[in-house]
Length: 364
Image 1: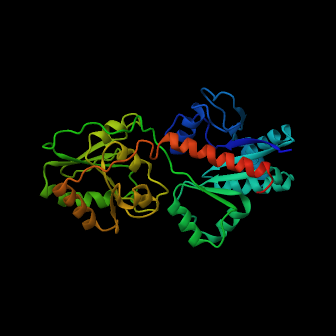
Image 2: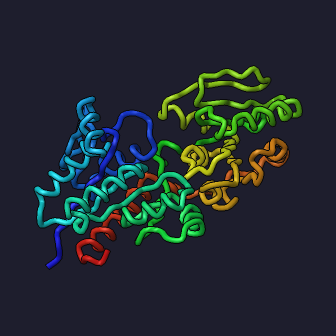
Image 3: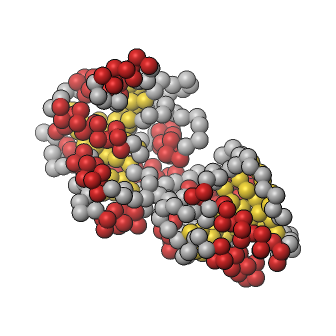
């Protein structure tokens, strides 16, 4: 007779989460569609509505709890004690536990379950939203602690496979998804209008805005009927042809993308995926992006846009912008379901069902 199983999501954020966040948005869509596989959520208390048909186990991180955790040498004790109580309630069940981008919690969870002789009942899935785990020692700890890593791209999986001698027993690939009913292409403005470029991110050095501004100062002199719109920062830049839009809500973003011609993604770090790149792509922007991290896969290795091989080289960006202005290439065709919330939800269901089958058959 097969074992029964339950799926538990552990989150350091309350779910539903009403702030801005990529993975919380993905899970929110997943939960409200009614076809999800999640049975319980362990998270901080909610101020608003809950998801229906979900067992909630709330934890608080008060000063007293922090002191207690410190005395127990486990900063996650307040979370793990709630998990233990839930597992004890369903003694004849096995469990798939999902953790998103919290390596410390994964390591602590394994130690905790082993200490309480519960590890054999649990299949741990770690959803990694970065690109590469640099430390071999850390990867060894992750490998010993979880049963499966979920990477954002195939290229991230291959990079970690080359970098490390061993990965966990199972690996899955699941691209991020966006609401393609909201982020969609509309009829473009007249060709005689000025060319609008857009950059959208937090203004940190690794996001490469300084590279674009340097290239732009030269480009705009050649093509004065052009504009660079900067989104995501309240800073202002006294550069000719630059318009700072500040931070705008996610609901306003589609219109900004839809009114632009070119999206610039000059990241200088190994992005796990690049969600704004996909948003702009679906809204009809021609994309020019750094050829590093998971970005090449997102742009299908150049099919969906141009890749800059030396992202620190200002002249490469300048030449790409000039080439666009001269050639005005057509926007590549991309299927509506490519990188969609629906495709993410279907992929997550498949990943969870495989994990449940493994633990129910006791083959993991």
